[in-house]
Amino acid sequence: MTALPRKIVHVDMDAFYASVEQRDEPSLRGKPVVVAWRGSRSVVCAASYEARRFGVRSAMPAVRAERLCPQAIFVPPDFTRYKAVSRQVREIFARHTDAIEPLSLDEAYLDVTTTKTGLPTATATAEAIRDAIRDETLLTASAGVAPNKFLAKIASDWHKPDGLFVIRPHQALAFLEPLPVGRLPGVGKVMEGKLAQLGVTTVGDLRAIRVEELEQRFGRWGHRLHELSLGIDDHAVQSERPTMQISAEDTFEHDLLLEELESHIRRLAEKAWAGYERELASRESRLARTVVLKLKTSDFRTLTRSVTPPARPASLQQLADIACELRWRVELPSRTRYRLVGVGLSGFIDADSAKAQEDLFAEALSHEAALPSGETLE
Image (cartoon, rainbow, N blue to C red; front, top):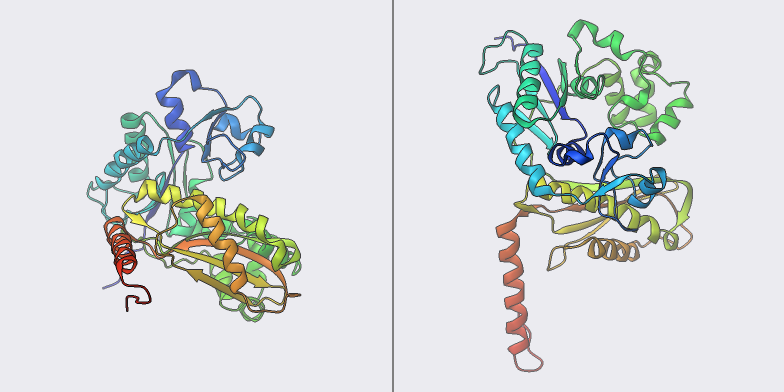
């Protein structure tokens, strides 16, 4: 039997955390709201559209946001409230399909190839979902409808805020052709620069490069770039996709020595920790135990070092300190220079298992302390 062509909807709540704050506090409506704790080590969790006009963006250092928009109103995040609204939204999704892949509290993929409601099209389903969100939560959401996940995600951003955009299968190639290559998933500033050296600035330019040349230059990623340029994405919506790792990384403008990396590691640890806190808010029963440091040398050699401490990292400070210490596990000449560094958290387990492991370790320590001098536990 031939499988039905997929119909994917990507739903993205508009400025979610900030919109919840504006909904619940009328005095904030129409004002530049930044959801963040104040302080030199804080990052922006969300910004209202009024604040975005000044260049404020999520994951930006809070001090920079304050410089860009001095009149911004800073509101500390309340993840309990955001999670309650997120559950409300997911209940709306579940009326239409069980094939739901949450990406965070404020966005998800839905496979609506077949639905519970019998609505005639994926577009009608997306419209019904957006209407229900507006009526029941007093918030707005944008949605993209497309034959696969990657196109649906691009589409949901097309008419933000409070918009709906549809890419039909026969429109995909023409839609993609003029887009900057930076709109493709996984193409960041560094890859954009490498592609620009080949004369590639748009998806159409990328499509004109032979797949063999892309593979020769970029390996398997080159093949993936070719597929994306053609609008190909076979990844299915995964209803349950446990988090494996949360990380942040950066490529430097100039290669650095190992001893010069500490400030960068701490900055990236802050970004990774912000992502981890969002994960805790959306999946509060899963905790990370392992700290990972990733390095790439000037000659593109990739190294990773990790450690799973007896007690899981419980603060940004602990994460940053452990990641900085991991540098010294790199056994390369001191003159080696590095072009990229990344900091991550992995080894996710449920909270009950984490508590049991920490209790066992504490018990082992107490028994060891009680042993006669010179004896240790085996």
